[in-house]
Length: 443
Image (cartoon, rainbow, N blue to C red; front, side):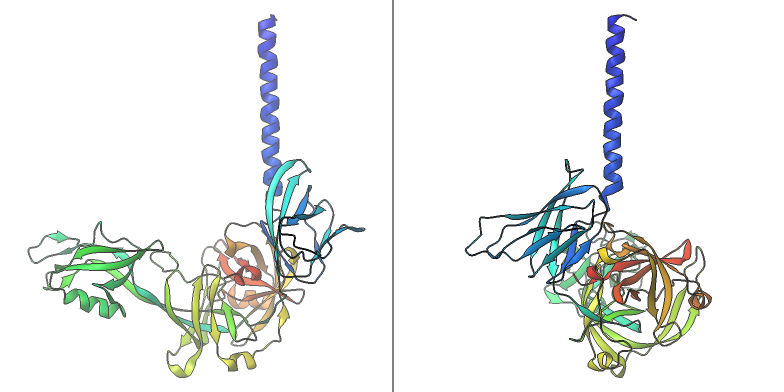
């Protein structure tokens, strides 16, 4: 082998070594990245264990004027404890070293926010973690079925189409002007009350230019549009619109201040799949009148009877968010709740293993056994942080597992409210996803 060939061979070996090191580094990051969430919540004034068991270490720090007590304990001894500041510390940073190779105990006495800088193996940058100190919370787990009615802000465009004008030509006045998912809020500066009102406004335009105020991707703008006549001599824009949605779900919790959380996911439009912009919403009493059992590949559903009148109103929906629907419920609902308030479980406290869900498939809220089979602390889709499997024979007989209408069913583990059921796994009806309760409380 010549020297030139030898140098090429050595270069090739070095290249392979570098690629191996890079591949190994990415593999290690992939394995450990989801083990510690980017945001960790802890209870104020309570010493808590963080047991992630990953080879990362770093510093907890906070630059602040009033230094609240922060302490960090390993499995065996107190490692460091901050003292109350005697003077302004606006320019100072106190830090506490943590090593998640072992169980770490943390305590903060005041509601505050801290940062944690972590490094893999104490060398490689890993991630920056927010630590939020929160007030401990007690909530009443519910599990009752609820009838839902929500009205959109303005009218929602769910489709753009064509129609024939009196001359037999295909026209589409809204094409290239409106889009699927737009909310039309005003016509010539006048607020739209509902779908019927909007249709009347278009018909009365008689072909005059209209200024529509629309909301698109959270931005409000004005567009100019002109209606056209159809073959029935009616003025139309060639769009399909919706102004409300109805359905049934399950209430997750009630608070002693008469607020509630339900569903564990938002109400999305069935055609656009977009989160519906809420103008107002109402909760109604509902009665479960039928169950369609789920099977692999075919989700089942609960069928409810809802009477939309004022006597059956049990609450007002004020928010429709990715984390669920929220609002104020009737005082009587809280006073007649089936269960007492229980603590919440923070995501790092949730374990693989036995748990229960509460739902009302038989008319009254009951506990049913499930297994928590996955806990995804860093799941991008917040509605899928927990994976549960139904093991309760009674519930499997009744429903086949998780079915539509059970969204919002509280997940209970070790006497704490851990989260809420959100979706069924279509290919395995015995399994479902859940959201962490702490995510619902950040709406």
